[in-house]
Image (cartoon, rainbow over the protein chains, first blue to last red):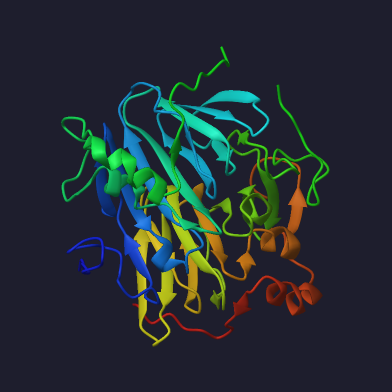
Length: 185
Length: 185
């Protein structure tokens, strides 16, 4: 039996509206969103955890490095479950590191550290947890991009309307750093 | 280059003592502990996230269902990355569910819900996040069990000293439910 719930985010979601209710979600069936070429799937959000943490995946094709950005109040986990992902990060003193992560590898980006990544294999998947004392981050992707009901990667990249960049990133504690240079190689 | 740090938990850890520092950890090289037949590996703890969340893996052999227990203030994620794990959970109204989870499947156990699991294939692996407003949970395993430096599963099960059961679970918001029955089949 598959149960779907109406929530504030979806008319049909596998995540119960009642945060006291335990639940299971099969692979791929969380709340899905497209942003650029990626598929983001939310399995748990701040509503489930009294605002302490979330749990989502990001899947994408081999591609370019994403725009450098940082979060003033959000710590972020990158845990690779498929493919290969190069994570770039700069600490608050300006020291930069990069590393190619493959399945089972882990990266941690504390708040205020500018970061970016590049998927270096098709069908790469990252498990993400992104939260801090000010709240959780998981609805950024569908607010800048768009919620979808279909399964799978976007057939064509979902490019956000330009006016969204003026409001959505700030609302979700995302500060893009245009012109940021990665000097790690 | 591999950097190791002295922390309050390990004389040589891949997790920096300074929570402002970004870091990478290759597969298996987090802070390791043995408890019963399982290997627990912590990749991030409360120190990294201002006490909001953590990130760890539990690997084990095919075995028996673990003791039923609950957490008064801790919400818990089970995300399967290898093998097969049957998750049992009872909500606060006494309704029970169980489901066999395979890689990519997700289970969420809210606070106060009694739960247990059984690894149903050798070399199963669960990614866990377990935290709530009162703090994070990740050092329970090595406090009840023992920290180790070796890689891999315990050669022989690590059985905690009986007196530990009187103090450690309470310290880490774990309440065992002896005699609990799973009636899901």
